[in-house]
Amino acid sequence: MYDINSEKLVKTFVELAEISSPSWHEKQVMDYLIKRFKKMGARCTQYKCGESYNLLIKISGDKNRTPILFSAHMDTVGPCENVKVIVTDTKISSDGTTVLGGDDKAAIAAFIEAFEYIEEKKIPHGNIEILLSCAEEVGLKGIKGFDLSLLKSKFAFVFDSSGDIGRIIVKAPYHSNMKIEIKGRASHAGMAPEKGINAIRVLSEIIATLPNGRIDDETTINIGIMSGGRATNIVPETAVCDLEVRSIQKSKMLDVEKEVRRTVKKVCSEYKAKSSIERNLEYEGFIVKIDDPISVMVSKAMKKIGLKPVFVSMGGGSDTNIINGSKIKAINLSCGMQKIHSTEEFIMIKDLITGTKLVLSLLETVR
Image (cartoon, rainbow, N blue to C red; front, side):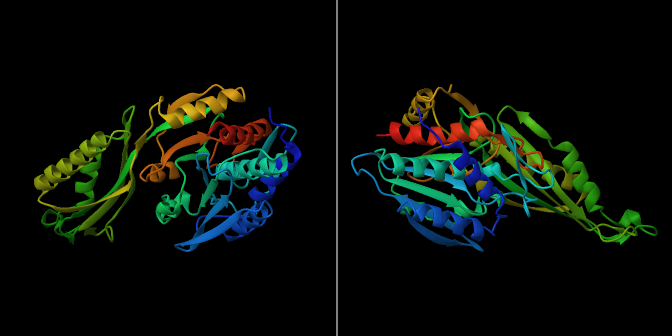
């Protein structure tokens, strides 16, 4: 349906992938993007965020059509310095010493090719906004630092999921972080251990009592960091751990948090230790119904290019979570990247092409 110049598309992706862009250090890739989009007559605006910038690109179109947003992120996880891309007839990967950066540069390459295509072919479209965030990989910091009220779009298509193209993420979790600090009593470990209260022992019992990993199909908990003590000859006075709770259902997340608090209180009471808990909501979850207008649009756009829509739930967060907390209805789509966040990351060339076709099909589907 769309005659994509695969050679040009691959070249664009390779150029993007070989620009180092760890979180908060996206300037080089941003400069590249501004240059490419300005050639299309787009307006590019940088918005300061922490140590970097978010990039908003606007392409004018028919004001009688619904304005839409395409979104991705510019940063990549490490190791991402000196990426060397290997291209075969069918597949793109790194040389195995770094990540490839298809997360999320596969999406950005598809955006560039799609919008160059519509300019070249004079394909009608409405007003388009493209939001490329910084620091997504370190807790969605970029999108959290962007004023979403600046956007005019009614719908947002976020291309930031791995797996086969055709996957539509309609559920993503609420995510909270908790820090537990236990205060016991210091004492000499050799001469008077019975006078101490071992904070590490108390915290260890709390952790052993709590559920671990997957609780049900929608809910998880993970204790990720633990520290405490000063020396082996001192009964440790303090111990700290950091954990996260995720669930598609907010009520389930809150129930697990309550269990954490109950367990901490009970174990500390038994040992006569003190405790404090800090809690922070990392981001809200979202559920998009299959019959929601945005789901219907995506399904129609996919079917137009021969894709079978597959609606799935995801255990991780993305910029989609934050956008859905605004006036814009957002949905997360796969852009074909595989084995992300590893040095084995790759993308098939056919999926890079299909991702580009999906962007074009969405542009023509949304009226």
